[in-house]
Length: 141
Image (spheres, rainbow, N blue to C red):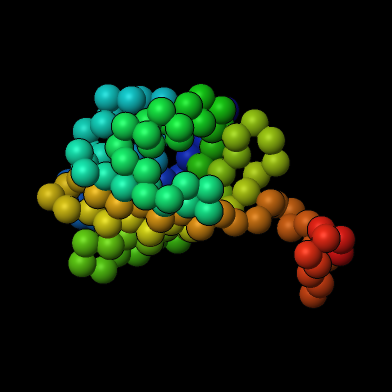
């Protein structure tokens, strides 16, 4: 698989390192590449990570709990990205050895380093509910 087919989220070398969106792209590229040194360079010492399964994990706990997932991440494709001040929002599709999924993330970046990440898990692709339909609380469509 070519690099372009694996990930369309590469940082733009023309942007300053302090651009929140470009900093986040560097972190996601490092995650996909399993490059621990590269991601550590953009994760702040006072970093906090929150997701539906994790509540304000510190940097050490993030690396212990979440970093191992990089080993099975096979692709990322940035669908949307924007920034406002120190915030960067991204929406991407990824795969971790199984069906693809879609996530949204909000990152806070200060001085070129990510200080906070909030992950909003998306849905499986294809969507498990029929078009125009939904899945009820018991998981039936």
